[in-house]
Length: 303
Image 1 (tube, rainbow, N blue to C red):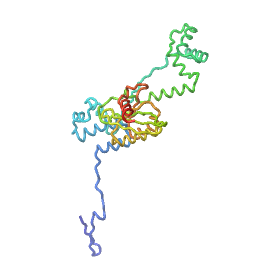
Image 2 (image 1 turned 60 degrees about the vertical axis):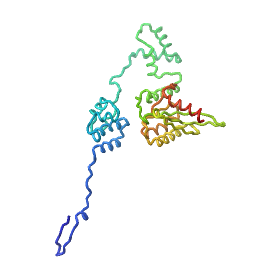
Image 3 (image 1 turned 90 degrees about the vertical axis):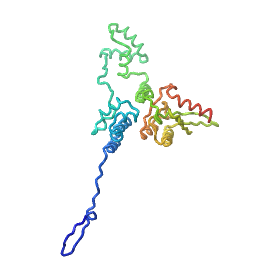
Image 4 (image 1 turned 180 degrees about the vertical axis):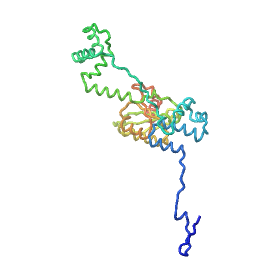
């Protein structure tokens, strides 16, 4: 396209595209926009998985819910539940809602009971709740509503312990154990890379102590092992990165025991790779039978 201008009998030809450059506007696909927003907001792994259902429904399945359910192997009831909850303007609607009960139990002991139990506890600092209950009933026979559970609640509320520092460490461990995800809470799926089971093997060779970190896919039985000179969380994180590279990042969940080598740096590595970390129950070998059997094979046939 050209313009011809007459300026003092000189004819000047101007090319519009040359002197007035412009770039065609690119229309952003709605599904691509959802992906960018989900990445920017840092949605959880479960929410991003549900977003994939919605994107597949709109982009590839031709708005066919049954085809989407067959592709991802999910029941229609589950798909419709999250599809109805999905809000284009708020991708956080795909996150799990809080399951905290609306109303919680309040204290059931009276102020008089509190003062009496505190007095008994200070007098018999090493007695447990059952012994204190007997003493309480003998000293105050008119109070029939006292129970050992109420005495325990009062002791915790007043924080009266024989070893306060030791009890504080025990309480912190209890809180951490409650926050950890247990393997019994995971709904198993027979999918490659869905669950990788990790463990540590300790052995001595020529007077030296060595640690072998092992991993095995629960369903495909693909196994990987690597030896380290210490069982620190830094080394297990290194092992996790190598395992992630070996399987091309096709890992969804990680299962370990409650050892110290699977804390701190290892947890940070799981968070960086966006992997869910599940723990076996304490002293329950049946929670991780695949890895235990692989460890036996490793010892008998290789080491």
